[in-house]
Amino acid sequence: MASNNDPFEFREFEEEGNLLDTNRDATTITIEDEDVKRQTKAAGFDPDADDEYPARSDDREELLSGQKKSPPFWTFEYYQKFFDIETHHVKERILGSLLPWPRKNFIQFYLRKNPDLYGPFWICTTLVFAVFISGNISNFMNGKYKPEFRKVTIAATMIFSYAWFVPLALWGFLLWRNNKILNLVSYSFMEIVCVYGYSLSVYIPAVVLCIVPLEWLKWLTMVAAFGLSGSVLVMTFWPALREDHPKVAMATVSAIVLLDVLLAVVCKHAAAVGSACCSSHSRPAQGERFLFMKAARGKSGSSVALLERIGFLRW
Image 1 (cartoon, rainbow, N blue to C red):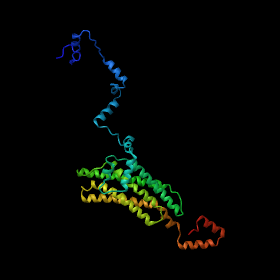
Image 2 (image 1 turned 30 degrees about the vertical axis):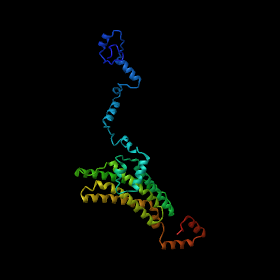
Image 3 (image 1 turned 180 degrees about the vertical axis):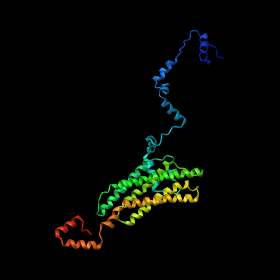
Image 4 (image 1 turned 90 degrees about the vertical axis):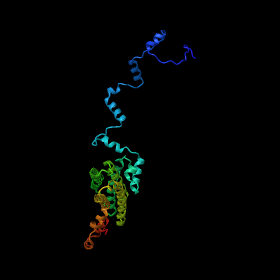
């Protein structure tokens, strides 16, 4: 049994008054609150900082509670998060739109509740310039080169309107049907915009191939592009429509496909307008050519040579 004078014997802490009564020679140190605050400030922690900066305290409380307030949709901060995406995710989504698979819903498999606007924005912008450049190259290859910069405005209005207003209409329609039928699958507006944006990526190589002066090849590439783009849209939105009334579901799918067909036809004609214009308007009829050549023979040889040189008598 240990003695009472054993220095290693376990003892419970007692109040300050009791300790001083038992051992008058003991030395005690009292740390005041101001000393504690001074030491914590020196260490980089200020307990009164939250009182001075209430916004910091509110952010900390929101993060701890998991309810961070989202900024309004008309501010840049709201859209900033949709441009924060890794490059390999964009590549993965582009490949998913080019190679649709029946069992892979684009929203569930590729977006995973994380839609972006970076990929759709640059895909639409690239498609606008592809239509503009292809149309001008087609004019040049058909001997009637005239830069038409208004095509940029027309193509940009057409493509960006399709990529924004069609998803807006579809989102509003799905939201309205979801209020009537509660078990429908619901998609957010940004998810629908993201799907439509990535579905346009297949039209970029198709528009570039429209430069080739073969009408059957132009139509073949556009039909293939429409098939891939339409497949992505139908397979993505069909799960949100199949529980609805059959007539409503089929009408909605038909509208989605019809608008995609319309976009494909407009892109084809906009990119290949040079060949169509030159073939139907730039060359005169056979009788007109004969009269012109007959009149040209009556002129001096230098005039005919000059006309041939500038391309008037190239027919």
